[in-house]
Image (cartoon, rainbow, N blue to C red; front, side, top):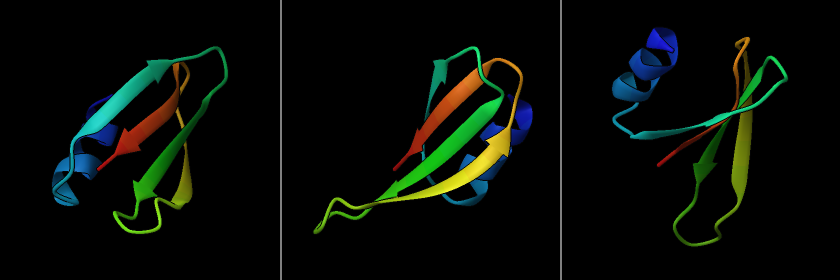
Length: 53
């Protein structure tokens, strides 16, 4: 959790964490115009999805 928060802070974005059973975290960077998502995968035992904006 701390590492994800640090990454989000370094990028100047907030993060939404969603609990999941799989050890994957996907960071989706949303483009304000196209709304396309760019996934970046991290490993974590209790969190699957992290959306930053």
